[in-house]
Image 1 (cartoon, rainbow, N blue to C red):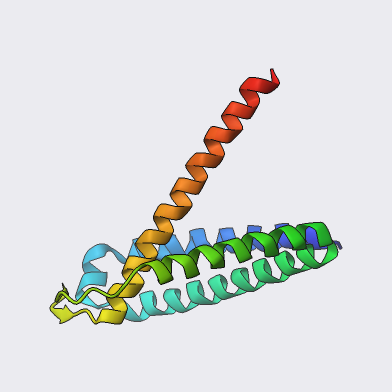
Image 2 (cartoon, rainbow, N blue to C red):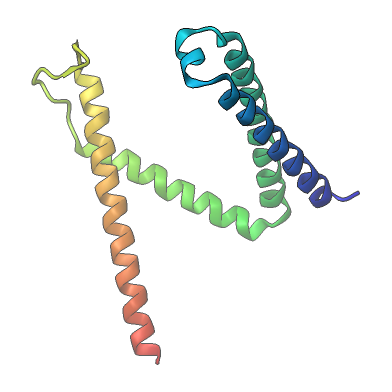
Length: 147
């Protein structure tokens, strides 16, 4: 059996198990869950969900790395994109500074470092958004002139 067939069978089994577990949780009822009468059932289902998530995540990582290393052109492109993203993050962190004002998050004061990281995240978002808008505009202009 090839890996595609095995992956399809695995996805089908996980889908069927998910439907069965969902039916069992719905069958327990909202009131029973809120009252904690079937918390053991729900906790067991959460552990199964965590296990399925970890297996799925491992398979995604394995097949992604396999695909990257079998095709060197895609590996180069992926590393270039990841490097550009890291450069944007470094630039946004360097541009922002920590805010000395007092911020509260759920009653807990935010530190200057946390404020700096939030600012860097916002600036990185703005840079990436501007880059995507420029890329879309340039793509549209290029299509206009190629016709």
